[in-house]
Length: 233
Image (tube, rainbow, N blue to C red):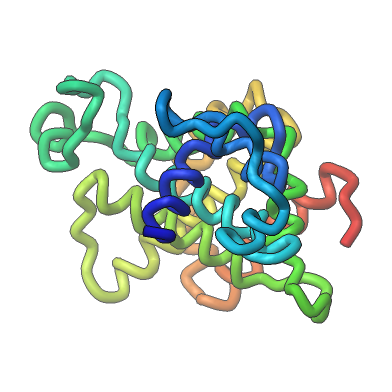
């Protein structure tokens, strides 16, 4: 029951992020945004937030993680696809319209748009381990980029095999991370920047075939996102 309530509250909290950010306040207000008959008259107490989502900044990390997972699901909503009752089934998407990588990555960048002012702080939090050491943890950045790349390949039905599988996803992850960094600093030109990288994707692929180079590229992109906002860790 507790898990069901937690999931429902996180879903209700996501639309509130654009106004209140990735904060404990957003989680507190989630009960106010529940459907009629379920909504509470008062926000969640701090004790309830800690019990449901984690203590301190861990609750915020839970909210960010839920927002990112929703972003992956959103990647299947390619513009132009026929929908039935606002529900998109992936197999139906492929049958109705062959999604392109460009389409899918554009949709993911569009998902960022309502919360762009809050993303640098969210990324900074994810890259800061609870212990405070080391100063920046590259794993969340790598995981985020890899998940976007995997989902993009799944949606478009990419069938790369063996070494090509890794190279393809490394290329997509690097392109997406660079585009996301650009989006934080220049939102209005983000799509054109993405298009330019995709148009030269063969060069991007050859430059990041080595895993170490790929990892370094993604992490440096995230560090750039954080620094571009003036947030110091």
